Amino acid sequence: MLPGIRGVGKTTLLYQAYYYLLNEKHILPNQIIYLSCDDLNNIVDCNIREIVDIYLNNQFNTQLRLLDKEIFLLIDESQYDKNWSMSGKIIYDRSEKIFMVFTGSSALNLEYNADAARRRFKRVVTPLNYNEHLKLKYDYSNINLGNSLVSLILNGEEQNAIKYENEMNRDLINNIKYNFNDWDEYLKYGGFPILARKINFRRLSTNIVDMIEKVVNTDMVAIKNFTFENQTNSNRILRYLALQNAGDLSQNNLAKYLKTSQANVKNILDILEKTHLIFSIEAYGTSSKQYEKNQKILFCNK
Image 1: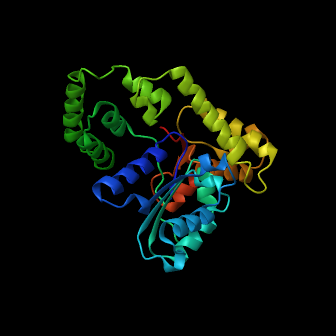
Image 2: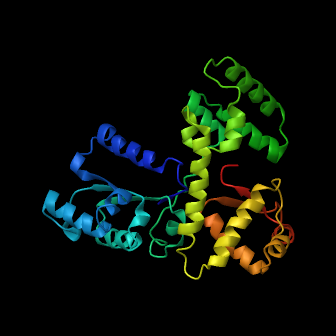
Image 3: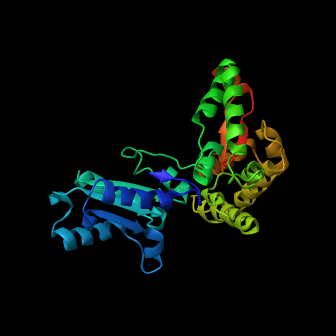
């Protein structure tokens, strides 16, 4: 399962997997299925299980239990089939010959589904960190700098961090393709792969806002017992976070600001984190210290 917010490259990953299997592993084309539930849903109600049954019958004149060939099933935007998880469960239980990858822009749908819990291996697709951004945009990578920063933070080792920072600065200065506003643009718009291309930043801003609205107004509303009041509270929380300096967030103060209970705030933050719009960082130390101190709440692209 590859949950993640829109625009982080899940569809591209599936295409890359398709061509990898086809060209490098020499899997026959009829043993690889790429399926976009979004596109299919525009024609007819998407039903993954039914599609797989039809495919196996047409291509191999067989059914799930009798399948003797290895099949790769790459399913994009799986949330458009409301029963995607049950379909995956049935396919998984009836045949060991089918390898399945599910992606979902409605990450919440993939996070909350109980049918997939025991059988799944989940890898969240996150926005790019700056090193990944440089690799994609300029074909430049300095893995040593990232490792040295971790050592600096955890162990206080300064020399390697200074060495690799100077090395990176020198390399980027000498890279004629490097845009010296690149760091500012990355901070403003986050680690979306589209930043690797020349784009209209006004349009990108609009797309990001539209994506957030779709998550709050569509994905979160689909959750049982999620009220219109909490939909409004979710939008207010996101605006509140956007206007604050990054740091500790007092759920008690936020509850007073929203005029709701602290338990309700905790519930909304938990759901927002499952959509991958935000993430939380616990205080470093013992469990008692983590309980006493407020969490840090950050947006997904920071």
